[in-house]
Amino acid sequence: MARGKSGKPVNKERLLQILANGGVVTKRQIELTMEYDYMYRIPTELWRLKNHLGAVVKSHKSGREVIGYELVNVDEMKKLLSDRGFDVLPIVSDENGVKTLNDLNAQPAPVKQTKTKKQKVAAPADVDEVTELTD
Image 1 (cartoon, one colour):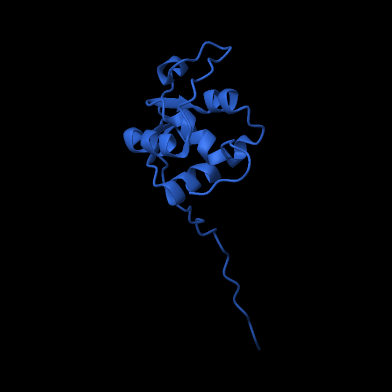
Image 2 (cartoon, rainbow, N blue to C red; image 1 turned 180 degrees about the vertical axis):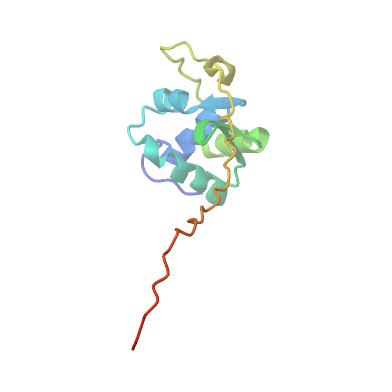
């Protein structure tokens, strides 16, 4: 595959270099290692990895929030990176001491059971009957 004049990896390749370490990588570790200011674009880069390069990425969640990503086909992607002339990037440690996903102590969010409300029917009020008298 022909590359441009610079030998720098594009964002999807940089993300792949981080995920190729194997195991679960937290979003904070990705941010620190990539030095990427636009973290809201990470799902787009993951989509490009999936559709353009054939990567299989699994999301790890705590409730609805994604807290980390895991590359499933690590060996294939390491070979792809070496064919493109790149190596795996070492993960930068977090200043908060988060090294693995277990350090976050993430718990699944409790599922709340919702009850269906019964509609109250208004009780009939005591209505006086009015009778009309005509002569």
